Length: 315
Ligand SMILES: C[S@@+](CC[C@H](N)C(=O)[O-])C[C@H]1O[C@@H](n2cnc3c(N)ncnc32)[C@H](O)[C@@H]1O
Image 1 (cartoon, rainbow, N blue to C red):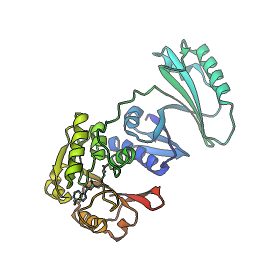
Image 2: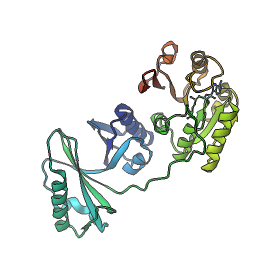
Image 3: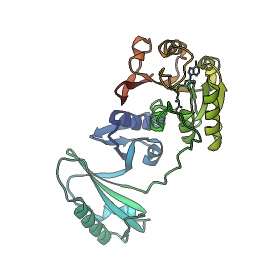
Image 4: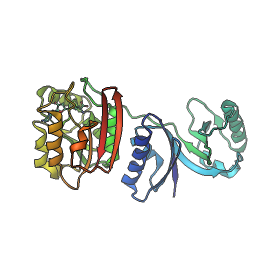
């Protein structure tokens, strides 16, 4: 079974690791995972590129060719260079040992050039060969320069809008596939809808505020996205639960964002209406979740500033 590697940003490490596992399990429920520091190793039948295309916090990703006990590579390790004309070597040192990385990368490049008919191209290589050092094991793998898909555009923003990375990670954590539908009953500027559509997940947004509804509409239109938008109270989602597979939302905080009522009362009402057997990810102000009868399977705290920590609740 192929093994993939993902070097994660350390900003939200727990979220980042869980996101990789959730994406892998979305497509292969028997996928196995292992983490060493900010390195995630996934064993699954799906290709690393499919996981990498969705993963929010993966800085580098690729396929593992083998685990290594030393630094010795033979000709058989370079099968992957068969169709490549150019390559580059990269060392990722997650161990506590000190290495002269430029020196090591250049001698590895020399060694490979002798074993395979390929040239070094540091700017635009066909293949990148990775050596990853950790305190436990070393890995030898490869990757390709990723074609970056353009980010969804926003013509209008608002101070209370959600960070796109958190929107994306929430969608991934609940394992929505391409062609499935997410509902955001408090959609604001449409961040969750935009992230969903950029990953091929359909979306339905609801917001009671005319201004926010119009902003969402414009943000979707500029990207040519087709999410359904409804202007009205969040409770509208209860009458269309056969139209979506999961809910991902960011509730009003009672600060910059308008709320139809006290945000703590609103969240209580909202949670009481949540459909059973749907995938759910909610972001709210930390503390709001205490009086809820929600029994989340996982929670993540996201520090914003000294008077606001938010919580992501997954059900
Ligand atoms: C925190 S904001 C959502 C921000 C959004 N995730 C974004 O990225 O722009 C909460 C939104 O809930 C909306 N809202 C408040 N009370 C509502 C209600 N009763 N029904 C529907 N929407 C409501 C507000 O207008 C606001 O746009």
